[in-house]
Image 1: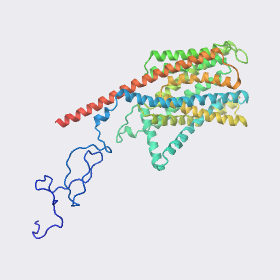
Image 2: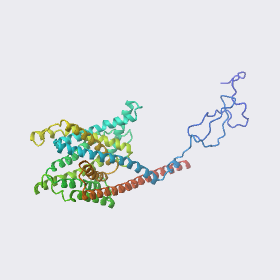
Image 3: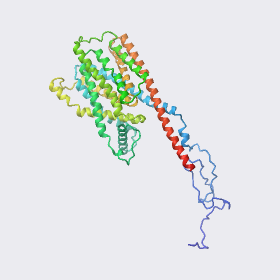
Image 4: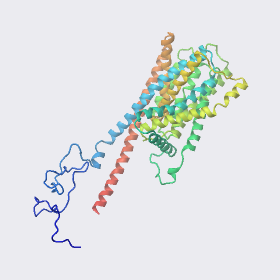
Length: 471
């Protein structure tokens, strides 16, 4: 218990240069500073390598390790600025995918028309099955792109994190909430895949019926009726968005949708040539039946867009990258459902003689392959566009292809554009600009409100913390 008086340590317990009044006598100070600490590192120029005097605790600014406070970080930008930056980022991605979808849809339309009319391979359902079934490749292509971006990461870790991202996003989609349940809760172990299977079946059925209506009505009514009625899906998308997406009925959006539909009607009927096709005017009863079929298809296509946004897209506030990844993943689910389920009508149509199953050969086969690839590109871009913006904006943006296809036909065939086509196309462009501005303003307002809620929550937390410190 007692140290022998004749036994002394090899090194002194105190530094010889320390005064007798040193309040830190006998203490061993911390060597170096913590990361982000305002204190400079302790000097190492003292004689003793073990005991160093404490450096004066005067806070100095270190440019390599600046100090931050929670409140100063949160107040570095106003809510309006943050909202505009988030909306601008989302709109930048949306603009890119809009451009890709417009170009790919135009190319796919021209190739499909050439295959059906010039090469004579007119197999409506088979083409629909092949094009929609090709969407299954969206997931592996996206996975390859993401893997190339993170090629330095080990594959097991990359795959595990990617699956976790998809699972958590699917839970967000099912719950329509940004915050996920705690890992220890029962809700966290709930699998979202049964919900995705049911949603995929519902959305794919609406899409397939809408697509089939176009192929059925193409020989029953006039091309102008077909174009005008089917592209009214933008109106039905807005009509379904109000009850299903709880979207506010805004005057600027309603006017923009109305102007777009007027533009479509001008393109279809303005030149006076659309009332009859190349093969003559169909009978009134046949034309009425065709218009009813294509009208039902227009309603179903608008419903498909809204159902996809409501049931298969992450809630508002989800990061842009997460939304893009899940949109392409759901597109692959639609392709898988098409391949494994919707092949059933093929033998039925063949037996009944309504559409003989026959694969294309030669030039038609190569062009069909190119059409399938381009359609897959359009679908991936269009699904991302709906996920980032709204079904209404995406529908009106799709109407731009009417004017673009007319311009391509003019450049390809040399047939000049009519005044009705030009005027109607300008109306569609005007409507798209009006709707884009209205959507941009609405997104900015929503982000602003969300930021205000977040900041008010942070201020409440700070007040609670300060109250605890006062106690």
